[in-house]
Amino acid sequence: MRCAQFRIALSARLDGEPSGLPEVRLDKHVARCAGCRDWLARAEQLRGRVRAGAADGPSPEWSARLLAGLGQDRPGEGAPDGPQTVER
Image (cartoon, rainbow, N blue to C red; front, top):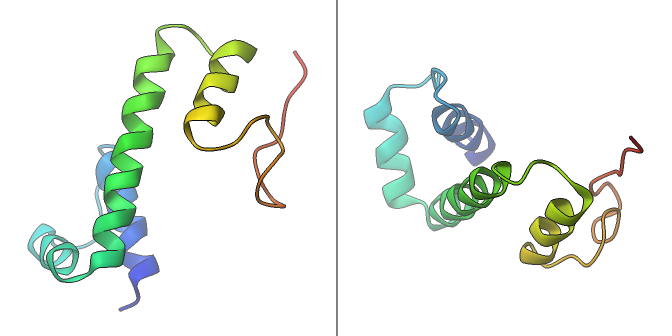
């Protein structure tokens, strides 16, 4: 099984959804795989930032702070398929 499949399962678990894998198998993989441990740590950090910012609401200022915390200056910068801005 590839790491991508474990990361999908980890994402589901973070969202409170069924992971689709036995929890013991998922935990064993994370314990052995440095890449998935790092991915999980970053996903948990992002989840915490999103939850903390949710109290402020998804305003442009909140979005800018979140993106700055992720190492981006403005929406749309960074990866070519990065976040897209939506006009409201």
